[in-house]
Amino acid sequence: MFTKLLKHEWQATKGILALLCVIILIAGIAIGSVMHYIVWNDQNGAFVSMNDAGIAVKFVSVACVFLFMAGVGAVAICSAGSLFFLIYRFYKRCFTDEGYLTFTLPVTTHQILLSSLVNTIIGELIMMVSVALAVVIAVLLFLTAFPENLIWSDVSLGLKEAFSQMWTSLIEHFDVLAAVTGTGIIAALSELIVLMLSVTIGAMVAKRHKILAAVAVYYGISIVQSFVLTFANLSVVFTENILWFFSATSLTSLIIGIGGYFLIHWLTDKKLNLT
Image (tube, rainbow, N blue to C red; front, side, top):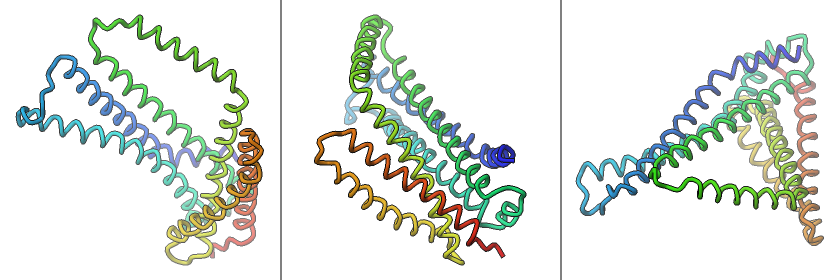
């Protein structure tokens, strides 16, 4: 039944996520095209002083600036918007009229919550891949603007040396890299659960303006969370061991995430009243 719930959530969100991914990729093309245009014109001596430029050149220059800013803004807005959309989907599924149907299904509360959480994680991973592809597209378009007589073998050699040094550094500091990666993953999952918890509490305590209540609850939880993380990190800051710092952060985030999840479960299972 969990698979069916997850499939239903994916069907409900895939359209908007696909649209956001397309916008991000188009933004990557726009950013790369602007950089390509600027570099290509600079290499061919087409750029002149803005004081000496004609109206057409000034217009194109201003248009490039706005296009570049619009592309960067689109990537940022779509990335953040995807998370807000997925969290709103959780709210709509559980705390609106749809919630009457959701909680009458022959499924457990754990299955309902986990399907929403997993679907949110999958959606955010897809958005991260889209952003990475947009960056790759922008970089490739930027590189194609360089003249053909550019010695690509030297560029390739320089990149290989840079990657070799980076790889050596990663191997030498693998423990720190693993700690940073693990802390980031745990903190991200914990933050998703905190958002879901905020929506749950906001939807239960407010009869009207439940979204605004959820935002207020989120800021309140974030303040408490920041104090908890600060005190947890201060307890190890004088050890001069960075791994202890990341361990304390990971452990605190893990406790917050697990505690938040079971609090959501208890609230929706015992306190939720959809009548």
